[in-house]
Image (cartoon, rainbow, N blue to C red):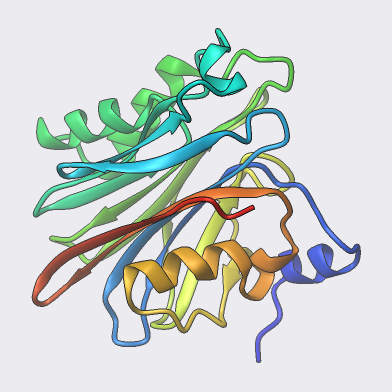
Length: 228
């Protein structure tokens, strides 16, 4: 079994708070995957809701989160079509998707949007993180912008692996941040995996999750809520 640096770091303490998690990967059959998990200390009353070919993160009605004036609580986190899928932790999901539709290359679509929006201007300078699945090229990408850096990286992984970045602790794409124990195949199983399996079981305060899989028979997606 391959043990990643991230896994070693995570297991060196009982729990680690990493915030939101974006993952892209391949099932053991080789199907392309995009996944997202909300972990939150400040805004735990949220759910992932599917709407057409996208998934939204929304505040639960009549909760404290719904009453907040933070612009970072609700957003579109996942969107797809027959050519690509985009997953992210904020309002940059749709602009990246629209640039791809307009013909931008994946690297250019991610970089231009992240540079334009910059990190989230909250008390933590929360990074914007994202993943992209390019179906035409069978290629995966991860990107992020922090207060001090910008990174866009094509991801080379084998079937049964999931590469990931997080808003805190691991915000930059790195070859070491690969979960090689990725055995989930169906969307709901992938949601559970990114919530409580492998290295992700050591990342605390999960709230909700969503995932998308592209196979020879089409696209499938799922959401997982009420994790606490």
